[in-house]
Amino acid sequence: MNENNSSNQLAAHTVSAYDEDLQFLVRRIAEMGGIAERMLEESVAALVNGDAALSQKVISDDLVLDDAERQIGEKAVLIIAKRQPMAADLRDIIGSIRIAADLERVGDMAKNIAKRVLAVHGMAQPKKLVRGLDHLAELALTQLKEVLDAYSSRSPELASSIRQRDDEIDAIYTSLFRELLTYMMEDPRNITACTHLLFCAKNIERIGDHATNIAETVYYISTGSQLSNERPKDDETTSVGAEEE
Amino acid sequence: MNENNSSNQLAAHTVSAYDEDLQFLVRRIAEMGGIAERMLEESVAALVNGDAALSQKVISDDLVLDDAERQIGEKAVLIIAKRQPMAADLRDIIGSIRIAADLERVGDMAKNIAKRVLAVHGMAQPKKLVRGLDHLAELALTQLKEVLDAYSSRSPELASSIRQRDDEIDAIYTSLFRELLTYMMEDPRNITACTHLLFCAKNIERIGDHATNIAETVYYISTGSQLSNERPKDDETTSVGAEEE
Image (cartoon, rainbow over all chains, first blue to last red):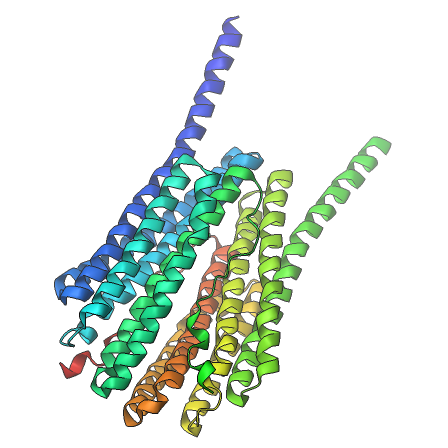
């Protein structure tokens, strides 16, 4: 009986160390998510206000995300090697590698926006453009927040609903794209700055794509099956201008 | 002795089924790589020649890559769960998930170029731009081919040298970016088509980034350690125009 007890204790100890390992991944991803959200917010604020100091902060925050992704990847491999997890946990651990990669890319997008702040600064930004970019960023931020909620609550329903809402971001991106082209045509002096704004808009649209990727991973983690491949991952601006031929 | 023999046979049988599992991943990735290379070549050819049929082919090829990535991801999880591999094999299997994701993204970039063929068609494309795009695509294609060689030969030296050469792609991308801006300013009627060409150039530059990602994964697979984080993953056009303020 004594033996039984100590073997139970051992089992409990092992399970709890394993749980701690898994919790480490969950916690690090939540941290990465928080940083990525803040970087997106701050990069767009820096762009709209021409705030060079804030843009520098975003650029250096990106290194934190790079390190976190590497750390999650290494820890995930260690956990798998040490614990030899069964299917559901294995999906979870591999899912964390994927999600960390998506969040690292979100950081890259925000950094890329921040790096354009100087090139755009000084341009008279029409209110309509600024409002459009702000709105696009807000939608992407909401997607990001909700998909991180879906991850921490392991909710396939929430994940699946987020994935469908990416269309809204695409529609706003398309209208911004058209406005930016018009603005360039009206005054060629706007061309350089508007090109940078185009890439900023594209970066935000891609953040929406990464949120969608994460939603798919969360669905896979929590159900073991893949969402069907019906969402169009590409933007709809690729044919702007084609109708005029 | 008889027993020993049959246990040896069993071990050999198990090892060989395991090897087959690993070979499956290697083979599928080589196939994905071949398709991604062809998609890049064909998308740029379609763009330069205004070939709508070829662009349609590239767009539908992308579905093949999407399926292959999903298949590799699922197979990788099955192999890990069934074989409980030790560290080196585990790195290899998880590396294959990462590489498949990068190749799938390369396909997305090529598809995005192909989708712009109609919007660019009809524009008088100056020879200099076409030559620049062709050159950029050639460099990215070389990177892609070599990184797939590095993967099949598990060569960390080759992987590490590829990663350093991404700078050349960035330099050509930057000069193309400037040329496209100039061309837009000279004649506002070029703005729409040039904007699409800008995104095409950016897509090719990003294919170079994905080749670099794959190089890093190959290095990790073959050595167990990460390449230092010194390469600038971002492009250098983000400050074009800023010097004029």
